[in-house]
Length: 490
Ligand SMILES: [Zn+2]
Image 1 (cartoon, helix red, strand yellow):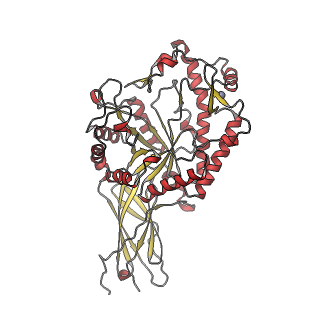
Image 2 (cartoon, rainbow, N blue to C red; image 1 turned 90 degrees about the vertical axis):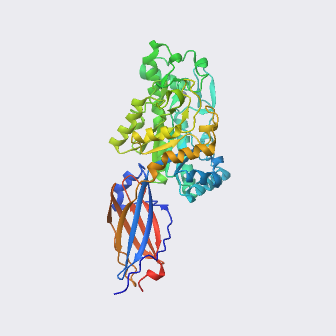
Image 3 (cartoon, rainbow, N blue to C red; image 1 turned 120 degrees about the vertical axis):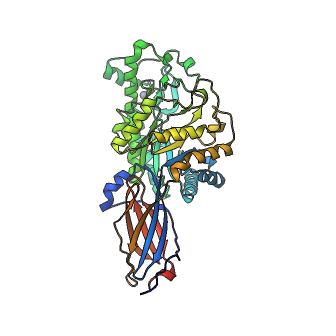
């Protein structure tokens, strides 16, 4: 019998995502788009007389996301974020008009993020691309505000001509993304509702509203004054400052918000459908403010939740700092509803964290407070946290800096307990036939503390075993393991 050639191991691991998952793993594909965690592995191969053995240490991490502007993506900053435990970046993709330089820039940024192993979410508004060039006539397509003022460059979502043009632009965008291999793991529709005062009063909308509800569209009162504040809601209750309407107008406003929600929900669904047609595994998610309907024109629970492609929901349960800490600034009850609903429906749920003065003049984010926010979020069993936004937590409009470097140290300490859990160990015995070069061990199940991992291996090509590790609601992790020549049976 040949001696055991253990120890001398060459592991050549390359992380990449499985682009498609056909046939037998279809059932898993449904779960994988929810992204409830990220798999990390450390693989060791040891040759034995009859073949070899893979020892696979698997760790599952929650999403730790940071929002960046595309201009902020530099190797230096990515390294700093990586070192403090950030594993996900959300950002707007500069694809607006699909010009050559935009595509080139998007490709460059996505490439840098993928090279560093980040999971990438496209953080998008309702207009990820401009549909201008597909509109034959510019007349009568603009949104109109309650004072009858035309809002240039803001087409009315309900206009069929606009919808058609938008779908053409979106189709072209996805085709370009496929062609240039611009593939984010997910898209997050970022607070897609509109606030009172942003609803459309165009001829088309007014007529339809009248027909539908036998009512004229309600118009806001005192709006110009009440929107002087950038966040016109009362914290910490998260309720809108009701100055924009008289209490007697509540029913009409509720109808108005629902009316507006329809085309917005449809638009989100269209965006998801287009992306899915190009990237079947893309994760489709929506984040919203906690429920401040009807001020906020998005009936999340009756609209967005019905979108078939929906994989994840998130809420901006912002963090109160200072006097009110450790209270969440948004509505706690609604925030919990997000987690509970997601768990029931198999969706993922992340909280957006932001530390700022929540209106009690308690002051800016202070050292140590991000730890409290992270701890409280995970105590509510979220699948991840997203931080809005890079640099802004300390340099943004709500805060005075206490030091970016210091902030990153605090963040790193805060997320460490959730990232450094003990790894689950799986063993796969592989029998390698020297001449055939096939590997057994397909469909092996590895038991870990957290459940069952499914492991698939493929035949070694050029001395490499291809290994795929599956875990429900996680992206399959694919690695190549180079079998050291010394351990390779001849
Ligand atoms: Zn309109």
